[in-house]
Amino acid sequence: MQIPRYVRVNTVRTSTEEVIAWFTENGFKLRRKRSIVDSIQMASGTFCVDEHIPNVLVFPAGTDLHDNILYKEGKIILQDKASCFPAFVLNPPAGSDVMDACAAPGNKTSHLAAIMDNKGQIFAFDISEKRISTMKKLLHRAGEKIVEAKHQDFLKTDPRDPVYTNVQYILVDPSCSGSGMINRLDYVTSDIDNMDAKEKQRVYSLARFQVKVLSHALSFPNVKKAVYSTCSLHNIENEEVIVKCLEKFHEKFELKKALPDWPHRGHAVFPQASNCVRASPKEGSTSGFFLALFEARNSTGTVEV
Ligand code: SAM
Image (cartoon, protein in one colour):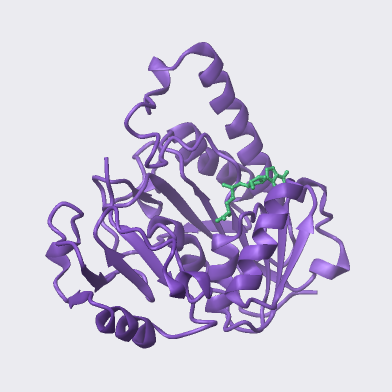
């Protein structure tokens, strides 16, 4: 199974216009029609601008840009389109305080910093020292200066810690089964009933962890917007996590319709499921992905201290 090669322009280092100019000067042909986005139809050596996410370019499947100078200079990030949804939907303004609960290797953190115009503060947590170190390298190459990378269990952060008082935006992209990852789609069953007992147990255990992480994020007192995402195909890690957290937090948060123009929506396992986003190779030419957006009910744009 193949999907296009997506490229996010790192607007901290350059602009989409400059990157388009570089590719056209170096033998690539810019196409303007959406119909060619399908990886099978896209001719080699062509590219186009993505129609949903700003600063994302689309190249034919299999285009290898790992040796490209723009990539080496941190001007472009090789990031799947669906993986660009969370920061785009969270959309924290420049100058805000943001938490990225499970951040490494840092693609979404880097996207957040770009959206914030490299102004403000991002607390980026990860429990893995190795992945934090990879993230630091990625953020350095990308020129991002507002990220405090914290090798720390997000579940041990204290929502009453004054350091986090001004945090109004939280991204929650926890460990998941990865069943939507493109290199696994051909052989991993997305049907929980067909899984062997060990894998089923793993998915249920991940789902319990995901509920904990999202609940913890929603416990920070001044959160205005929180985005939850996974690259899993399973309802248990997606819609069912949202149901459990809404049960606990419905007085404080509502589930908003994310990416309203995106046609592929959450599975109808609860009444507001269509507010959630689904994506997959068949549903949007991306890897398998899920996203939900929570907004505080009393969201006034001011911090209640
Ligand atoms: N958001 C990342 C990105 O876009 O590059 C990908 C995150 S990956 C899906 C999940 C991450 O959660 C892993 O790096 C893992 O080490 C981290 N993690 C797992 N448990 C954690 C915890 N309790 N606190 C913080 N990070 C955790």
